Length: 423
Length: 134
Image (tube, rainbow over all chains, first blue to last red; front, side, top):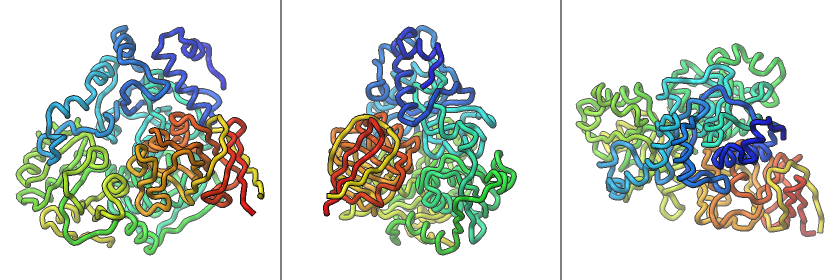
């Protein structure tokens, strides 16, 4: 593959061991992915912290400390996504109901602060969210090359913001400001090749979530032009993206007239016929809903909201549903650490606490675990439904996942009964 | 014995001959793979609970979370990967796993290979040979 003189110098170790390891990692990934060169990033970065770096491309903490103390900075504005699993909460851990997580020493140890403090010194925003793009207050613009991690975030960058990104965010890519040039960095690959139509208007958040999951299963890795949606909002797009990359692996899509790179279906498809057209009618949508709504039960003993991490408007909506009421079963509401103080100052935290619900930040049940003994959980996220069972369900002892709208889930928390459905 | 050669693209080099374990659809990582146990934990998945250690793990494509890297971790890793379509998930997994991996195959390998077939994976040159019993 082609490397610039600067890149060759880094690869040969002339600019220190950390830059050398980073360049080795990027070249390795580029060769695997079939990229012929690296691209200089001019957008934003987002990476998941891995203590000591990734496998053979790792380097000791001491080398990172030396680098930070030398004044080295990340090349692009970068958020640090998460800490390793078991991903501890940044707020709400004291009363989450899991004894291990309620131990302050455990929480402190797993926050990875020895690394985070060095990252911050190097300019990283240690925001600890799967939805950093919602709280970062700084976004890439159309055409900017980025390097992000997190499957639900990647379509937000590509489709919603018009940035250019593959799911490859790492310390290496964000620190050096370089990424393998392939996939969504290349204009031709961003054009739609399949067309999606809906047999009913896709309007509510639940409908957007189910539609996303169903499209993901059909589109697989293709870029779809999506029609049939109504009244897009931030919350709906976030859910749609997360579900798309649960049912499939869709880095990019166009909703003509909504997303920035395609004003019309014809433009999205570059004037060509779609390779395939899928029509998702009532039957297909219900089938998708029933895949996500896994072995639902009448009695609920846990309610979880906030996958991907709720934005401030989601928190506001749930606070309105809970104000002046009391939950009957344990309820977690998850958001980004940076929104905790905002939720507090807006009065939402007090409403949640008065209702008996817990506001947590920076993680999710699939990543941190759930309180002991829970067999039926209600949630409003196709993504979380699909991953929570991977961790907690077996054929012998299934976890029941009741899947529905925010409102259905809050009702379940208030009554202990599940009444949600696909409507 | 019938031999079928399928051309693809090198994802990661190395050569190995082994027994195929075939997923008729995609694989999904993060919690839906147990790297410690070396098996799929995705609900209703045909490979649920079946050990893949040392096997030629054949699947259509990688979907879902960036945690697909779970397939590239642990002592119970597959012997090689063969899949029809590559993406950022399969690339990152191959970088971590460092076992032979062939992708972008000319036909969907899951339509030809059955679990238990012997498969030669040539990651260096980007092709596989399937040995079907008569």
